[in-house]
Image (cartoon, rainbow, N blue to C red; front, side, top):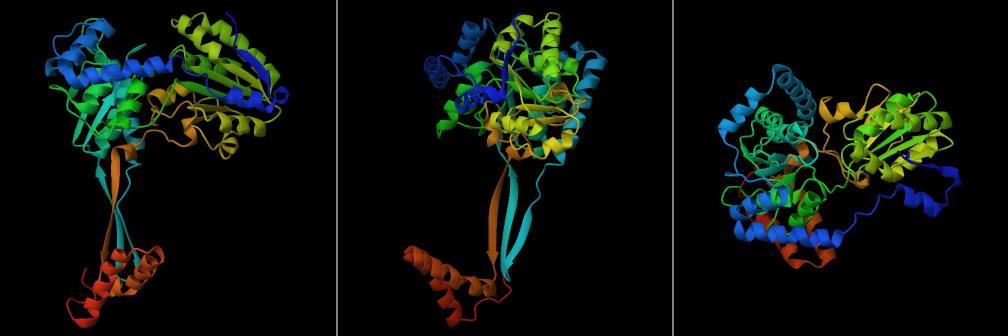
Length: 445
């Protein structure tokens, strides 16, 4: 197996450095966009019939019903052993603990005596969760999406996931959804699932916002429906999965290699990156990748994803931090002498793992943080999924008569500066009313 590409930062030109930290271009995007739009239009015009047809033609699965029955959910629980269920329950508990702490509180501020400004919080009325299953079933993703939706109190939460060859959804995924109190589950995947949730069909309710990771088809479908005022908004833009490890001479090459491979197995377009100040650690890690990779069941996928991956020698930790902030990884592992100090200068990453005992796998499953993260460099401006993504806030203002008298002239002056005389009039008429009557008290809200 060819190892991942190796570079020395100081030997690269400015253009080569910029090219290195940019992601591989997604191929055939025009063809993909066209195909996705065709699927979306088919679902919009034909509803459930399109979903059944596309599931048969694209997934190779014939399903008699789109919606998962209560019987199927109960059967799924019986198919799992106690250890499997306990693991899901414990992960759910940790995720709940961390996400419950994120729930924002309503606020009220008296900005001027008699002028009260508030922020009130409301759950998004209807949300659609997408749990992929192309390369592997992902009960962890059902938890990562379902728990914040449940804590936010969204009145309607539905979930879509691709069916297996036998026409059912993976038992662990169904059990995880049940733990999150999600009962409206649909056996559809890909772009057609996104279209169904965005526009609604006879069986699938239309939702306001879409959540969840997916392949290029799912990602493009989310992008397309979010551009349409009649569609649905999305959680975050994303691309293929990725990981970066920053390592100094204290790092363990065996652990580093395992972490890189754990992300590389997600798909052939995943990217695993190692940045190190120590040449020995780099070379030892590359040897470990070869040794460990050949023992893994997803060897063929890993081999493809490593073609997109690279290892980089830098002169010091400050340079490594510079590279990390330029790259803005989905996952960032800091295997260094003082990882907390390094963290202080990290500006752009989806989720960060400190020290040798914090593998990315733990964040994927059960530490409590969310594994739905911005990829493809979007960590520069987007955050990891949280309860707040399932909420929206509204501002409220209330004024007493006395408060209005204090700030009304300010609004008048600003309206005059902007030449908006209707704005001015809405204030002036009230001030004149106060001056000519005794209606209301100064403290009335």
